[in-house]
Length: 453
Image (cartoon, rainbow, N blue to C red; front, side):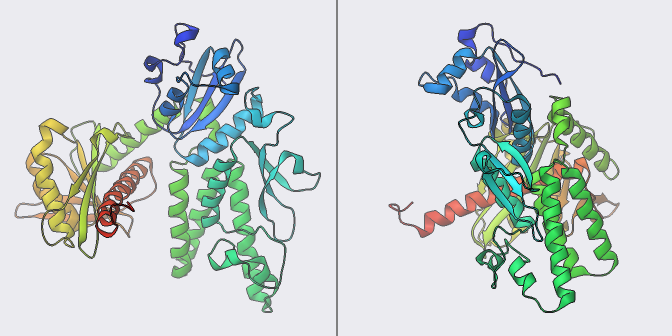
């Protein structure tokens, strides 16, 4: 395994602003090295640049001060999600046992995830001192317990599991869907057929969690997709919709799905993934539109309101496949009919084109919505030769304009999980998050007095 090092000119200038500015603001893992090839310290961060720069302060004390005094160079490995960074950090820490990862010293107790070996396996977190010689499966060690618990919380919402012994009544977590089916309910069910069905469902959730923690993220996704196809074929639409919702949540916490070892084999993996997403998206678009530009800059728009109150819109911008918050914009809708998304989008588009020179011109516009939303933006942006597509909220479809001799029509195509589609969904999700954020801010300002805000 090899790394691309960012080497300083001298020890005293190791973490100055020049070198920190070369690090991306994406999530990932960072490694500090001394005089040998073995890392002194391995850590994870949601924002790599911010974390690296935090070590520039002169107020460092104790272990951190000693670490920086011994560090000669460093490297970073970018990933796409908190789950990937957690698994990658745990893998590297377990492999290299860095001296400064204090939680891993003999007198400390690192955190592990334990899947018990019993009729209804439990998913628990345990310390090193609590690891026994039983047949349970252990994953770790994980340097930061907070990150582990955050990821387990996310997984439990998708694949519910138990943490308790068998009792007579459904546990409290069963009531909020985090232990469903609950082993207590299963064991106290008299109908044998229903009992077997619930038992299989519970064990399936455990198998999925085991696969994810083992690094088989892509394999788990494929199994869920195959099950969805089978349910649809059997016309079990209610179960299919439930599973489809689970897949959506799973995609969100693992996007994009990349084997952990790939990041180790290729330190530039994330850059390669982005290039693949843009290339694949351009291939999709060129089937229906003539895209002449490189898709360097893509903007996505969304509208947020509650019954027309405090309507807002968001514009988020990806540059070369990466969110660039310098070009994010919020729009407070001015027109009176705030519940009219179409009028709101038209207003935003008319305001946006006034700043094509000062803000920059996009190579592609994406809107969160169907044919009418796509039409609202396309009628404005087409004048400036800027292509517009929509992503339908409920049907997993893309919307394209179709030029005819008399009028502008729009058609809808079903989309499948490809790198380009994942990029579109990331744009959609980020624009939705950004729009809701501003909407909630306006709502809070209206409802709460100044002293509470």
